Amino acid sequence: MGKALEGVRILDLSHVQAGPTCTQLLAWFGADVIKVEKPGEGDITRGQLRDVPGADSLYFTMLNHNKRSITLDAKNPKGKEVLTALIKSSDVLVENFGPGVLDRMGFSWEKIQAINPAIIVASIKGFGPGPYEDCKVYENVAQCTGGAASTTGFDDGPPLVTGAQIGDSGSGLHLALGIVTALYQRTVTGKGQKVSVAMQDGVLNLCRVKLRDQQRLGKGALKEYPQFAEGRPFGEAVPRAGNASGGGQPGWILKCKGYETDPNAYIYFITQAPVWDKICKVIGKPEWIEDPGFATAEARLDKLRMIFDTIEAWTKTKTKFEVMDICNPLNIPCGPILSMKELADEPSLRATGTVVEVDHPTRGKYLTVGNPIKLSESPTEVARSPLLGEHTDEILAEVLGLDDNAISELREAGALEPPRRQAAE
Ligand code: COA
Image (cartoon, rainbow, N blue to C red; front, side, top):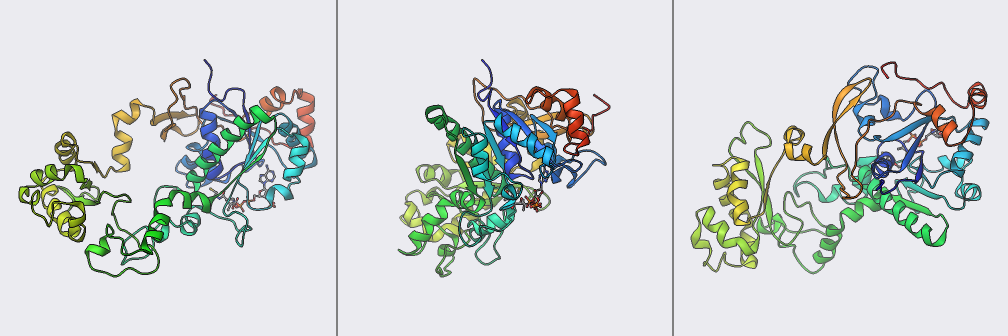
């Protein structure tokens, strides 16, 4: 059996993180992803945060596996002809240019549809239609405008952004789902369609439970939020909840043995109601099992701070892994705060292909995150990212059927740039 998306060709005009995350996923599922890049420069991330002089950055390599790269000047008349031919022979066009860029290139939705009515055009923008539709947007702007920042952090501190790239990679995930859905619908209708994801919308979707709480706030205090137990009044908007769990089972991050020197010696501990008796026994408070002030989840809400302080007095005597080893057999949900170093070294993540070592001709070996979505009949093999323009000639010959003379003419017309072939290969 081949790969799930074998035979699907993606014309990938995307750049930076949001679009490339999406097309990398599609490539991992077997699509032929042709990354179109500006001659000479390519995706700006190739040179950003460079750690090896002259080599593509980890920023680029970790977002562009399993793709082919063609350099093409989309503003050059001959380059436009090539782009038109590529649109004709592709199933999906993906882009996350700034607002209006594709139109300025001369490839409006109407024009693209006229070229290929079956093509799916998938776009990420910062905002949907409305007052900010013309704005350029990066990750943290999306986190701030989508509700994540106002609800992250502690209620007595400033808004915080999170390290998880929910604006960029989150939008890429949303877009990938939109694309495969449109491809599925096309099997019935035979027609393409536009797939649009606004980063603000994607972040808000991931902050769904906070809009839930906004509406609950209208009915009274949010009793599971720390400021309720700590006696601070609520305002009009959902406050930042610190490390409180987003669901109905209270949780908090607690110190473990070694926290004084190890910034990650912490554990997330959930006081799940069905195992309350086990928690009481394990932390040495068996009297809380029957005590009416502690026996029910409702009765505990105004004492959560004190309860977590008491649990922490116990977790501080154990390492985060010892706490896990004791609590897991008792079905007490908890999780150690794992550093990136610990994750990189974790053998089980290597075994499942979630952390993968990749070899690259100019930068050598590096670690990346593999495909987190596992299909039993379509396993992912992570292949290194392409060098800039590495497949220009190959794509022009194989996809468009151009011969060497035609390719030379394009080069002379300034539509391409000679591919920078890697000497080591
Ligand atoms: N040939 C010729 N020109 C090309 C080209 C090619 N192959 N590929 C890109 N370009 C040009 C475009 O035509 C455009 O030029 P123009 O402004 O003269 O029309 C330019 O390169 C790209 O513009 P833009 O996408 O606005 O890039 P930027 O670096 O100024 O802004 C973003 C970057 C990410 C802020 C912006 O693209 C954006 O807001 N994207 C949508 C939201 C998004 O995805 N954000 C997250 C990114 S991780």
